[in-house]
Each structure stands twice: as structure tokens, then as C-alpha cells.
Image 1 (cartoon, rainbow, N blue to C red):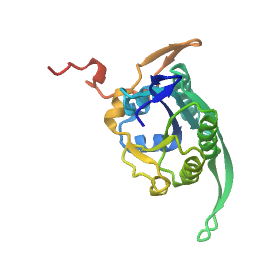
Image 2 (image 1 turned 90 degrees about the horizontal axis):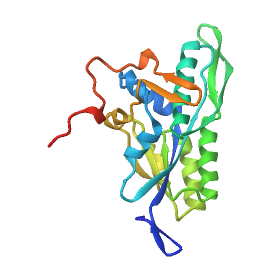
Image 3 (image 1 turned 180 degrees about the horizontal axis):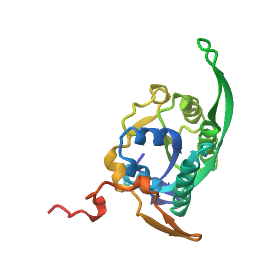
Length: 229
């Protein structure tokens, strides 16, 4: 897939990204570099596509607010505002509390469980393919539940391409790859290049980076580092 002809003219391949927010977040969390969480998903996607042959046309983030934690909620709200400012479409799911019990100690508790993210990703990807919004879809998750999405995509849209993008430090889902998807990997360097500024201004005012996401002392953004001769 090197490009498309539209009315006799050669145009770039249209690339679209579908991001499992929790899958990516937990992978970044395991890197023990909190500043990488403050990332611009549109910029991240731009660093992953072949710039000479593809044009990024859409980025979709599927996520949900974790309940009963005001700090997490505030950080998440800022992150979502920043993503929307840069053109990312955000689709929200929700949490429910499920009853859990321990057979050994007889303890009973309610566990918050995220709902809708998986189905929101699948629906967004297939719906956008149906509307012919892209030629190449990038699926950012290693969740094997999305293998069903990949299988349906391959069956219904044989002229379009799907690439499975594994979050940093994670292995690809072999079930997704087994459905014919190509593979790509997000690295810490990709995330560094996509780190957002400490303050972003949108139509509502300033979005100030949470102090928990401040980079370590002496860190310099790749765009501000001296260029090698």
C-alpha cells in the first residue's frame, strides 16, 4: 500500500489511530517515568506512521474516569482536554462496581470494573472503515479481545490495512496478528517526542500539567535538544 489514486491524482494513504487508553496508560506506568503519561496522542501517532506515504487523519481515544479518586479524576480530565485540543476524538466509557468475595477468608468487597472501552474501540474502527474515513487503521492495544475486531475488519474491508500497535514493554497479541494485522511498537523514545508542554491554552483557558507528570530535573524535550551535525 503506497498511496491512492483519486480521480486520476495520486494522494497519500489516510491513517487513523484507535487507542485503548487503559492499555496504554498501564504500559507507560510500568516504565516508572510518569512524565511520559503527559503525551500528545496526535503527535505520538504522527511519529509512528511513514510520513512520506501516509497522512494522519484521525486519532480516537477510548477511556473512562476511574471512580472515587478525585486526584486521578482531575489529572484525567486535564489529559482529555489536552487531547481534544490537539484534535483527538475521545469516547468515554464508564465503571461499574461488581461484588467480589474470597472463598478462603469470606471477605466481601465491591470492585470497580471498567466497561465499554473494548466495544467502543471496535465500533469506532469498524464504523470509520464503513464510512471510508481511512485506508490504514492502527489499533493501539495488546488486548486479545480485539482479535474479533481484527477478524471482522479483514473480512469486511480487504482493501484496507490494519496494524496492531503494542504499547511500550508489551508483547503483541498473537490473536490479533493471527487475523492478518501487521505490527508496530511504541517505544519510550516515541513517547518522549510526544510529551506536551507544561501549559496548554484551549478555548476554556489554560490546561496546567499535573505536578505528578513533571519531567525529572535536567530533562530536555527532544525538539529542544541540539541537533547532531
